[in-house]
Length: 140
Image (cartoon, rainbow, N blue to C red; front, top):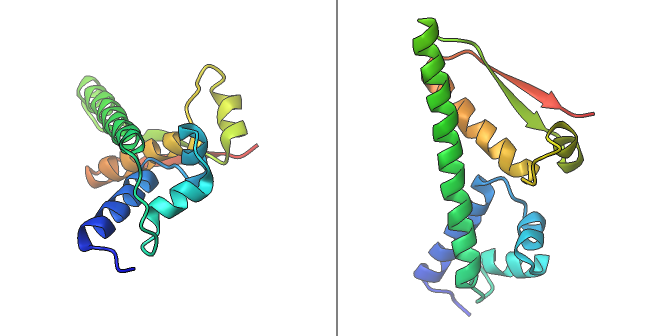
């Protein structure tokens, strides 16, 4: 069965949005409450399955949250720059897994991959703006 260009575009867009927020297929399936193979089928260019509207909405909501968190973090750095009168060196954190993330952030229920996605995007923005950015890996 040949899939239409529109369906292929929807599948690829879904996959790119999922990857952007740092979720593996398995992690997204667990969070959304579906089987891993469902997410694999939604993204497969050979399978006719598309994600349901709830999955698409959840993905869009998480991407919007990612944008807000990146914006908030960059704004904080720009505010600190104004206060100091110079660009500060920026420290960001990257987590090796969920258990490491939970150990370092016991109050958070966030998925470690999402936190790492924020780190990646903040790093890219600040690096392009000429900031010195250090990434600290938490690996325990």
